[in-house]
Image (cartoon, rainbow, N blue to C red; front, side, top):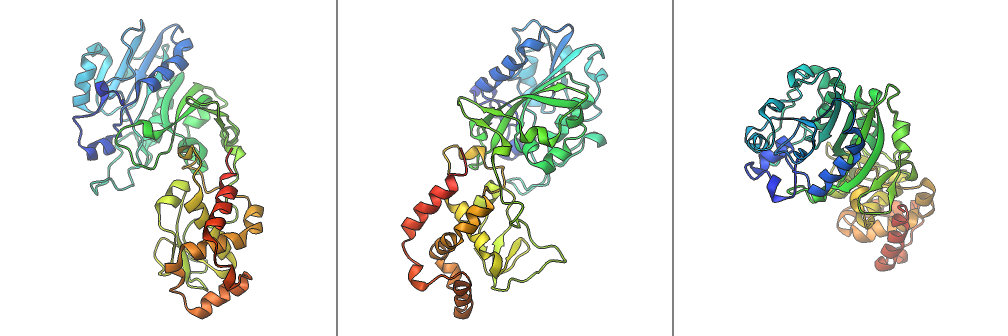
Length: 397
C-alpha cells in the first residue's frame, strides 16, 4: 500500500485492479505526521538524507524541511505529482527494488540514510480482483512473493540507518513471515510500533487488518522472533497496547490445514472443516461440510468438539477492536475448550442444522452418545450463544 485518504493524494488515475497490483492505497495525513514525528530526532544528524523509494504522489515528502529528500516511484503518472514537489535531481521514476544500490540515487556511503514511506504490500501469488496475478520484478536477493517484504529487504541493501515505514503487522507477528524478513531482521531492531486499522485506507476489503507504523534502527544484533512476541505495540488514538505473548492460540492442539499424505484422509463420521490460516480467513471461509474437498480438514469423532469450538469462535468472536486480532491464529485455551466442549457442540448442532441433518441417523446418534448429549439438551440456542460469546470474548483484554 501507498498514499492518502486526502483527495490531494488519491490514486484517481489508476483502475481498481491497478491499485491492487501496485499497492496504491494512499496514506492519511495523520499517519504521515506520525512518521515524521518519529524520525524528527534523526533529521538533525550530519548528512541526513530522507528517501521514500515507493513515493506515490509524495504524501511523505515535506518540502518545508531544510533537508535532502529523495524519492523513487514506478508509476510515471504519480511521478507527475512528485515533479511539482521536488528537485528533478532527487526524483527517480523507476522500479526501486531492481538494481538496488546507493550510487544510482546519488546517496553517498557517508550519508545518514533515513528510509520512510508506505511501500506496496501485496502477495503476488494471490488472485487479484480481475483474476490476474502480478509479478515481483526485483533483485534476486530481494525476492519474496510479497512485495512489502522485498521492500524491507531493500532497506538493508541500501544500508539505511533508520527505517520508519508502514507495513502489515503480520510481517512481524506471524513467525513464518518473520523468517522471510532476513536479512533485514538480522541487521535492524524495532524501536517503536504504532498500530492502526487498514480501514483508514480507501478501497480496501471489508476485512480490516492491523498496519504498523514501524521505526527500525540499524543494529548488528538484529531482532529475533522472541523480541517481537514480547514487544509492546501502542495503538493509535488509544491507551490500549498489544503484546503478542498475551494471547494463547489453538495452534498446538487443533489442525488448521488439510491432511498430509501420511495422515488420515477420510473422516470416520463424514464431517470436514474448511482450512483456515488466521482469524480473518476463518471468518471469511466456510465452516463445516460433508463433501471432502482439496481444502478440507478431516474432522474425526474424537476431535469433533475442537472444531465445534472453532465454529463457535468463527461465529461469535467479535471484540470491539476486531481489526487488531484478524492476523492471529484463533485464540483459545485448551482447558477452556475441554471444560466447555458440550456447550460448543450443542451450539454447533443448533446453528448448523442443515449440515448435520444430512448425516445418517446412526452417525448422529454415535456423535451424541460419544459426547453424552441428550436430545432434550438440543435447545435454548439464545442462552447458549450468550454464554459462549462471553467465554470467547474474554480471551482479549
